Image (cartoon, rainbow, N blue to C red; front, side, top):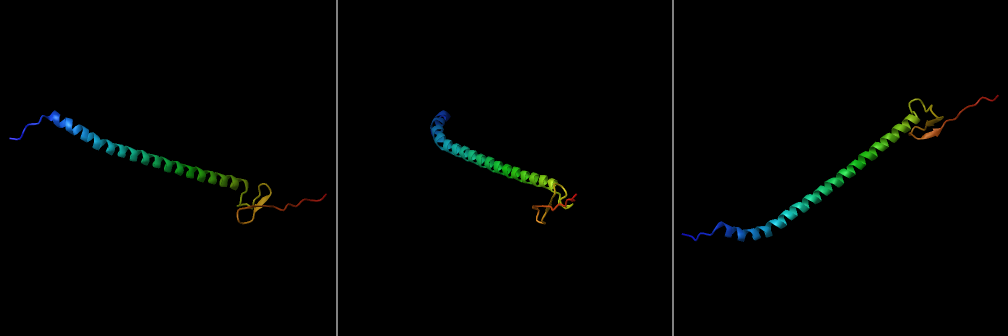
Length: 97
């Protein structure tokens, strides 16, 4: 019959071994998880900035479109468009008295 080893002796031997093996493993998992979380946060921030930039461009285009209506030949403000969307001064006629 093999000699009987009390379980607490096995625990006394296995605990330091497990600590040496598990601690670096857990540390690596945590370090990788934090790094991954930081990368995801950075990507989300950049995506948010891109959407804000796009929204600002669209808002600017809408304000410009309201100030210079292209459909009716640019009747607002005495300006028209040259066909490319850029404003050009409109010639005005005045009556001589």
